Length: 183
Image (cartoon, rainbow, N blue to C red; front, side, top):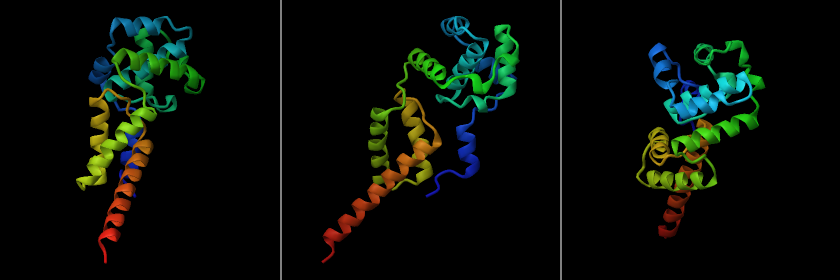
């Protein structure tokens, strides 16, 4: 089952494209986050942290460093007074990113996407499946549900997977109901 087109899925899983005004808006961060960034050891960590802060502020999601936009890297490096060459996506280690993500989630009062979040979302998907909503509408409502409940939004693949399972379970319920009613 295809919920998003390939282009929609790619757009969802990549950081948003910011123009000059968006960069000013989303990378204008509170002093506490700026201080956290400046206290990090490496220029790459400082730049990566602020990029994740800005992207999270805009979309409530985290992205892979290889997908960060060059113009955003340059803008954040300039804010910090660092050379943009100081950020190398492959050198921004996964463990460091996870630590930075925790700081960002805690600052914004969000819960990381985990098993309990997944379970809550599965219940919401089951409710939407019972009302016969289309898969794309369920996807969009899942994103809204997560943001309203201050939960991190996962990748499109993870959301698609949860929706597919929810719709499959609903289909199985309906088949079982038909079989129980049939003479």
